[in-house]
Length: 526
Ligand SMILES: C[S@@+](CC[C@H](N)C(=O)[O-])C[C@H]1O[C@@H](n2cnc3c(N)ncnc32)[C@H](O)[C@@H]1O
Image 1 (tube, rainbow, N blue to C red):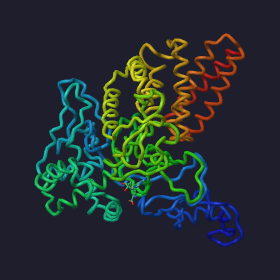
Image 2 (image 1 turned 30 degrees about the horizontal axis):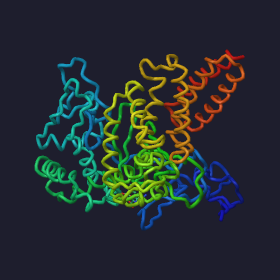
Image 3 (image 1 turned 180 degrees about the horizontal axis):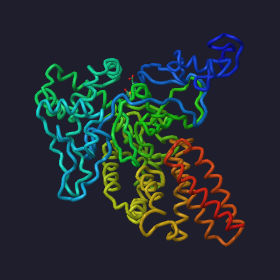
């Protein structure tokens, strides 16, 4: 049932019709009254979602009105930001990945007080770093992270204390922010017996209580904050800013997971998190994002979610042994050679697997260990050219069908390599390789419609690759009709990309360049 918006101005009560675009639940008679109401408190109430709760998900967000594809749903500033539990050396002031020093015999710039690496003296006084620096200096702690040539990407586990200390400091510096942090889910009891928390217990607690002398904090209080961070932080990736860190957003932390999510998120220049609807969302629908990777199989995704977020996903994709008809987790049957081997109960990771066509059965352990081997093989492969990945798909064709997770991961990497890798640049691609790129993009786009469709970044990136390949194909064609058809296809795709990516600032230049290349191709064709 649609709720009709009110008809009188929220400020002066005269008959009015200017609807607030954010929540669409109040109207105003004028821009002045809208501004006045915003300052008076509508800013806090203007939302198109509410926090709801149920037994399965706990707290979650739910749409309070119909939402259009591409609509912004939530924007939130971070409560705390800092390094990931293990991180390559980064500046604790501006959080940028550190560049190697100019001379390889020199070290990173080190904070004059606590010796943590920084990008320069300017960051010594950065608000993010000042308090932790005082604490470490007061207890004579000096960081031992140094530059080591060739190991710039090595992850340092010493960074695990930073985000934790920043949260602990909120208790005195910002008690209301600390209270919001403490209200978040932790799964501490489930985490305490894991190997990671055993290590944290040994190292982190000693560091905080003994080295830094924060004796008033109990072991469980400290571990609870670590568990809150593990359950709720978002990874912030801003490659153009050389940033790969984590951040806590208390409202966004309420958003639940679904393996076919209806929202996507990004970070703006001020590191606010911004959520958009990937498709139309009806009033009352649960708002979701994915905490895991869409091209992974159900058993891989569920294991990851259990280990990282302590829950067993039972979404529509996970509940269906065929994964919505995609068979991403299935292997080809080694006996009848045509059937697909799928789990008899995908919501039980220990359930046996069986061929759909013959009587071949496998234990979950067999499936898992084979998957782990294949994943390992894929991850250790040379990804500088398409050759090894094509070879992987070919070698395993009897066991892995066209949409098996390992094949999909290889195919996605191939869409990036054809046209970009040395020796495989767009103009160097053979007709066959160019056609392969087009087919791979189209195949993955079809799959993305099942798991990550609509206005998704995955889809936007695949469309960009496809558009480029189509223009390149068109420019090699001699038949005018075929060329025109390709260029028209490319133009329609570019329109869609412009829509999907219109909020991604860093994509605008690429889109403009693509438009220029396409216009030139159309001119040449004419
Ligand atoms: C970032 S928090 C989300 C907010 C949380 N529900 C709360 O009440 O604070 C992540 C946690 O929410 C729960 N959760 C999120 N999505 C879920 C899902 N699809 N199924 C079951 N639990 C889910 C899990 O307990 C997970 O560890």
